[in-house]
Length: 117
Image (tube, rainbow, N blue to C red; front, side, top):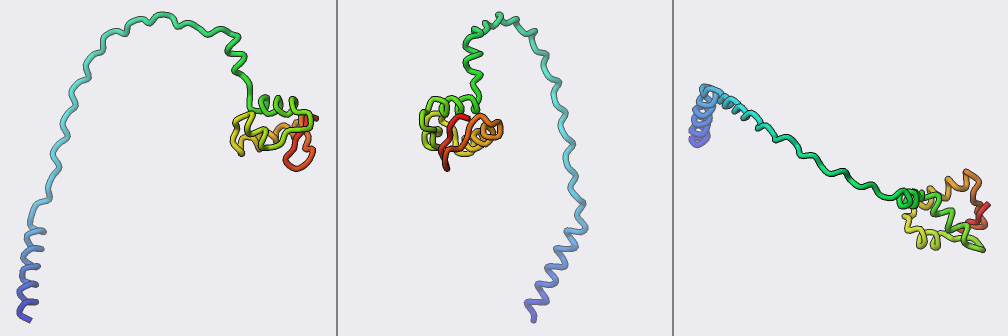
Protein backbone atom coordinates (compact mmCIF):
# COMPACT_ATOMS: atom_id res chain seq x y z
CA UNK A 1 0.00 0.00 0.00
CA UNK A 2 2.86 2.34 0.72
CA UNK A 3 4.28 1.89 -2.78
CA UNK A 4 0.95 2.73 -4.37
CA UNK A 5 0.63 5.90 -2.35
CA UNK A 6 4.15 7.05 -3.24
CA UNK A 7 3.58 6.24 -6.93
CA UNK A 8 0.34 8.18 -7.00
CA UNK A 9 2.08 11.22 -5.47
CA UNK A 10 4.79 11.04 -8.17
CA UNK A 11 2.17 10.79 -10.90
CA UNK A 12 0.33 13.82 -9.50
CA UNK A 13 3.58 15.81 -9.43
CA UNK A 14 4.37 14.90 -13.05
CA UNK A 15 0.88 15.74 -14.25
CA UNK A 16 1.04 19.10 -12.45
CA UNK A 17 4.36 19.85 -14.14
CA UNK A 18 3.03 18.91 -17.56
CA UNK A 19 -0.12 20.98 -17.21
CA UNK A 20 1.82 23.98 -15.84
CA UNK A 21 4.48 23.89 -18.58
CA UNK A 22 3.71 26.28 -21.42
CA UNK A 23 2.99 24.70 -24.78
CA UNK A 24 5.96 24.81 -27.12
CA UNK A 25 5.53 27.14 -30.00
CA UNK A 26 6.87 26.21 -33.37
CA UNK A 27 9.72 28.28 -34.62
CA UNK A 28 8.64 30.62 -37.40
CA UNK A 29 9.29 29.23 -40.84
CA UNK A 30 12.43 30.50 -42.49
CA UNK A 31 11.88 32.66 -45.50
CA UNK A 32 13.00 31.15 -48.73
CA UNK A 33 15.73 32.91 -50.60
CA UNK A 34 14.63 34.63 -53.77
CA UNK A 35 15.20 32.35 -56.77
CA UNK A 36 18.17 33.24 -58.92
CA UNK A 37 17.47 34.57 -62.36
CA UNK A 38 18.21 32.09 -65.09
CA UNK A 39 20.32 33.01 -68.07
CA UNK A 40 18.49 33.39 -71.35
CA UNK A 41 18.09 29.97 -72.98
CA UNK A 42 20.29 29.27 -75.95
CA UNK A 43 18.62 28.61 -79.26
CA UNK A 44 18.72 24.97 -80.22
CA UNK A 45 19.51 23.82 -83.72
CA UNK A 46 16.47 22.74 -85.70
CA UNK A 47 15.78 19.06 -85.12
CA UNK A 48 15.82 16.89 -88.20
CA UNK A 49 12.55 15.16 -88.98
CA UNK A 50 12.47 11.45 -89.74
CA UNK A 51 11.51 10.48 -93.28
CA UNK A 52 7.77 10.02 -93.83
CA UNK A 53 8.25 6.43 -95.02
CA UNK A 54 9.42 5.23 -91.60
CA UNK A 55 6.53 6.94 -89.78
CA UNK A 56 3.95 5.33 -92.07
CA UNK A 57 5.48 1.88 -91.59
CA UNK A 58 5.28 2.12 -87.80
CA UNK A 59 1.55 2.89 -87.79
CA UNK A 60 0.63 -0.81 -87.79
CA UNK A 61 -2.04 -1.38 -85.17
CA UNK A 62 -2.62 -4.43 -83.04
CA UNK A 63 -5.70 -5.32 -85.09
CA UNK A 64 -3.71 -5.02 -88.32
CA UNK A 65 -0.96 -7.31 -87.07
CA UNK A 66 -3.41 -9.99 -85.86
CA UNK A 67 -5.42 -9.79 -89.09
CA UNK A 68 -2.25 -10.09 -91.19
CA UNK A 69 -1.23 -13.32 -89.42
CA UNK A 70 -4.71 -14.79 -89.85
CA UNK A 71 -4.82 -13.86 -93.56
CA UNK A 72 -1.43 -15.51 -94.19
CA UNK A 73 -2.46 -18.82 -92.65
CA UNK A 74 -4.11 -21.32 -95.02
CA UNK A 75 -6.01 -23.45 -92.53
CA UNK A 76 -6.53 -20.76 -89.91
CA UNK A 77 -4.41 -19.50 -87.06
CA UNK A 78 -4.68 -20.78 -83.52
CA UNK A 79 -4.06 -18.82 -80.34
CA UNK A 80 -0.51 -20.13 -79.82
CA UNK A 81 0.50 -19.17 -83.36
CA UNK A 82 -1.02 -15.70 -83.01
CA UNK A 83 0.78 -15.14 -79.71
CA UNK A 84 4.11 -16.23 -81.14
CA UNK A 85 3.91 -14.23 -84.36
CA UNK A 86 2.44 -11.02 -82.95
CA UNK A 87 4.16 -11.01 -79.55
CA UNK A 88 0.94 -9.93 -77.83
CA UNK A 89 -0.20 -10.86 -74.33
CA UNK A 90 -3.29 -13.04 -73.82
CA UNK A 91 -5.54 -10.11 -72.92
CA UNK A 92 -4.45 -7.99 -75.90
CA UNK A 93 -4.90 -10.90 -78.28
CA UNK A 94 -8.32 -11.73 -76.87
CA UNK A 95 -9.46 -8.12 -77.26
CA UNK A 96 -8.14 -7.93 -80.82
CA UNK A 97 -9.89 -11.17 -81.82
CA UNK A 98 -13.14 -9.96 -80.29
CA UNK A 99 -13.00 -6.63 -82.15
CA UNK A 100 -12.11 -8.28 -85.46
CA UNK A 101 -14.96 -10.76 -85.14
CA UNK A 102 -17.42 -7.94 -84.30
CA UNK A 103 -16.26 -6.10 -87.43
CA UNK A 104 -16.87 -9.36 -89.35
CA UNK A 105 -13.27 -9.44 -90.56
CA UNK A 106 -12.56 -12.90 -89.11
CA UNK A 107 -14.58 -15.99 -88.23
CA UNK A 108 -14.02 -18.73 -85.73
CA UNK A 109 -13.41 -22.02 -87.55
CA UNK A 110 -13.39 -23.96 -84.30
CA UNK A 111 -12.55 -23.17 -80.72
CA UNK A 112 -9.29 -21.23 -80.72
CA UNK A 113 -8.82 -21.31 -84.52
CA UNK A 114 -9.59 -18.23 -86.60
CA UNK A 115 -9.88 -17.70 -90.36
CA UNK A 116 -10.49 -14.60 -92.48
CA UNK A 117 -14.12 -13.84 -93.21
